[in-house]
Length: 169
Image (cartoon, rainbow, N blue to C red; front, side):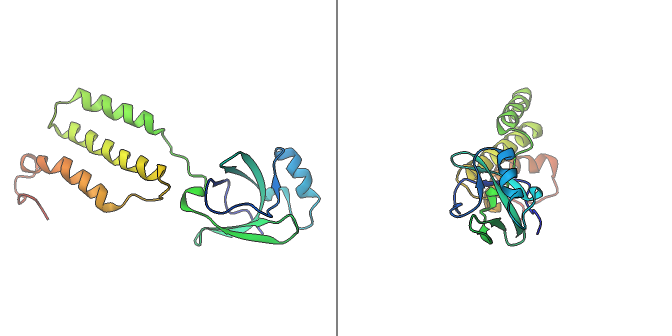
């Protein structure tokens, strides 16, 4: 039995009814886990829920199936299927910082310039990403990304790729 996920976010979807949960901090939960046969402190996993941060004993799981096995209060384990956004994903750069950077780049270049068009297109893709993340979906449909990129960059084609047919494939 091994811990699959370093941390979990269970903001919606599966509940933790019957799961062995530590509400009083990691140190207190370690004492509980040590007292349980078959559990080790290496199985302790932080979980962010809608209401607080708690700890659980993760006894296994499968990333391919998006499942996690959590120890139960009464013994044994319960398999939960996680939503894609519950796996502890953290953006590498805050969206607000990206937005400010792209706005500054766009401000430095004239409307219609390739750099300005690229900055504006990327800003719109990030807006789509933020919208889908707020709605709890794990992916932005490629059609939406294609539309944003195509609408922003299509005007550049004649100047930068004069041999291409208008409108492209």
